[in-house]
Length: 243
Image (cartoon, rainbow, N blue to C red):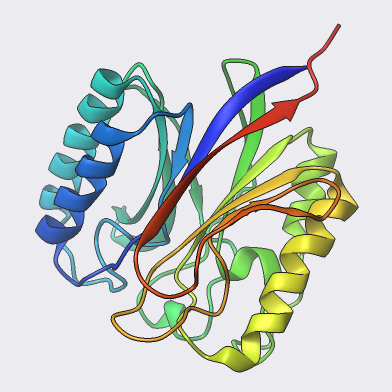
């Protein structure tokens, strides 16, 4: 067995890249973990009206911060490529280098007004940990968010060897969705025998409808932040290693 420390940040995401970046850099600098995950679009804000030049500059600052803090960060960001906008999780390793990216594969109807879906599900291996990334609706394909089939991406990542799924969320406060979201996290972790590490975007007022925390392969919440306000957690988890 190998022990790694994972962390998640439930932060208020504003439309301002500068404000969000300051907070992201703060959490990276103060982190005491191996992996830290941030909410969906936590860098750029949840919109497509961002400067590609400013975002790329922020990515470089985040990469440097990861190297200085010796932490691997999963950053929620907007990304522009070849004239298209994507909702992306961007993974920077503890050496400051880009490990890889995941583009949201199942954007909601609202997302598709400014972004296009990604095309590839990937797993990554870093320091012996095999993991995947999912973004909000990728995991649960919430009813009412579009007539899209559920590709069961958590299950596919498990079959691809993932031990951990880092799930960046920006799901809002509609409480009718809370039981669906949280039961999905539990059942999908159990089905695929992996950990799900979540980070949701906090709301200015009220509770989010999916918790920030860690669900074990047995379907147990090992860490669970309050659903109101800004919070972060750090937790040691044990992973199987090859003989």
